[in-house]
Length: 143
Image (cartoon, rainbow, N blue to C red):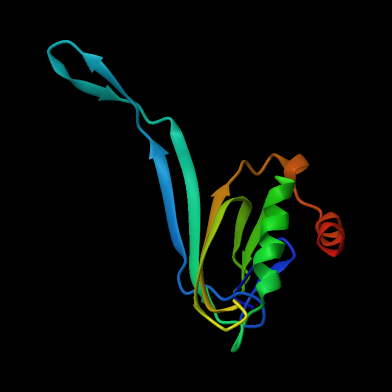
């Protein structure tokens, strides 16, 4: 297991990412002053984003159903716990976007190679009401 987002596990059998890109912002707005440089004030932490780009090659490893599962999770609008395979807990995250590019097609139109990029946004950990239900998502996938 590389990482888990809720009950979705990233790995070779499902979806393996090649990079983990994380950007964290801190807010320092400025106020103009006469005859002096702008004054800055630290307001705290800003956005925290993770991007997971990777390649899915259904012939070798990974499953097309994995991308559909992530889309169903995103459709719920819920926040999901993100936990690394090492046990590191990143907090609660929502799926902000998922893009894919399909190339190298078989005669029937199925793609041999699918490049994807998953964008996650961290949400306030006190918003427990947004925590996604694994059973609810599983029910939506099976419908």
